[in-house]
Image (cartoon, rainbow, N blue to C red; front, side, top):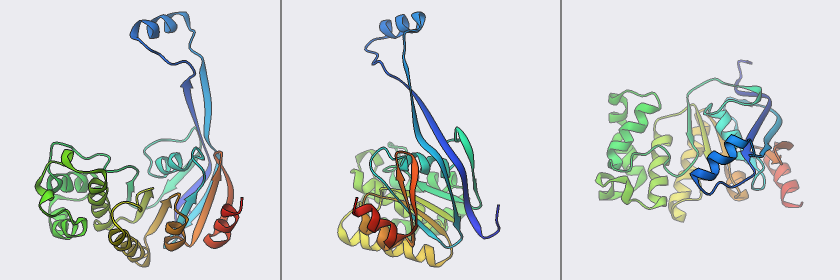
Length: 244
């Protein structure tokens, strides 16, 4: 891996195998399994995706639904392994791939801050030192001491973002989360992202919002049916993408 890079992806390909038939009961599932009647459909979510991300860069990823954007996030986060190719990551990754994924719903927001922080590799003492900043950023008020199962999706996303953005990740991966909350919170989140970029951390943003990608990313990757259609300066790539 080159010393100036934080992410290197080479020939990334991801194959999903899904049944064509819809199983309606346990009896039918057993019957089809015994008779080998299940038809498997192969779907290539990504095909031969290669790129490098240098320290301090911010990369946007755009494309239509089904283009492979979320699969790419899962591979970069090393949650899944590719069918073919390789991905190398140098640094601590904090990934927000869904609204509050990993939260324990019966625990309070405050308790979940500690759980998430420890899960991301920090000691309890380190999380404790950041606790008040995280609580203040999330702007949940008294709800911080209420079980997360009572939160709206926007509240969960704000808490998740506050945790990820406050624990100083070296690489932050966001999948369609910058649009949560009111306009003021979105502006505050964008400002925090710019701070992370200025501190030489890498950022990957997956979004359908071209305004978000334009505001945060200097470079953009355009995926089409799992393949890279364009990779270059954000304004150039978004102009091509918008004029399809």
